[in-house]
Image 1 (cartoon, rainbow, N blue to C red):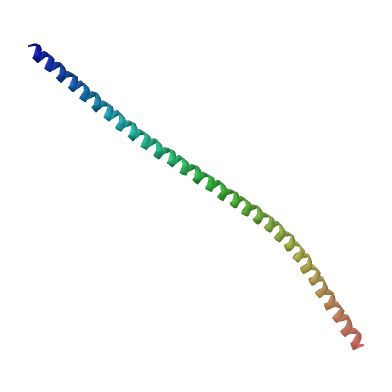
Image 2 (image 1 turned 30 degrees about the vertical axis):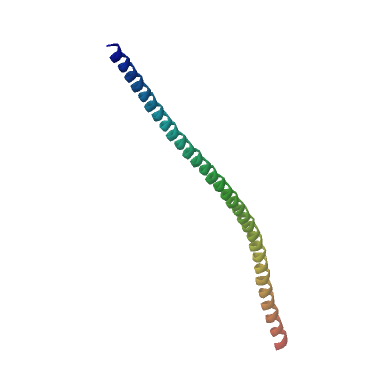
Length: 110
C-alpha cells in the first residue's frame, strides 16, 4: 500500500504541475493578447494625434485664406468707391460738354 500511496503522490504532483503549467500558459497567452490590444490602442491614438495635427494645420491654412479674402474684399470695396466717384465725374463732364456744345452751336448760328 505504501508503494501505491507513493505512486499516487507522484500522480498528484504531476497533475498539479501540469495544471500549474496550463494556468501559466493561459496567463502568458492572456498577457500577450492584452499587450497586443494595448499596442493597437496606442497606435490608434498615435494616428488620431496625427489626424488632429493635420486638421489643425488645415484649419490654420483656411484661416489664412479667409483673412486674405477679407483683405481682398476690403480692397475691392475701396476700388468700387473710387470707380463710383470717377463715374460721377464722367457724368458731370458729359453734362457739361453737352451744355458747351449747345452754347457753341448757339454762338455759331448767330
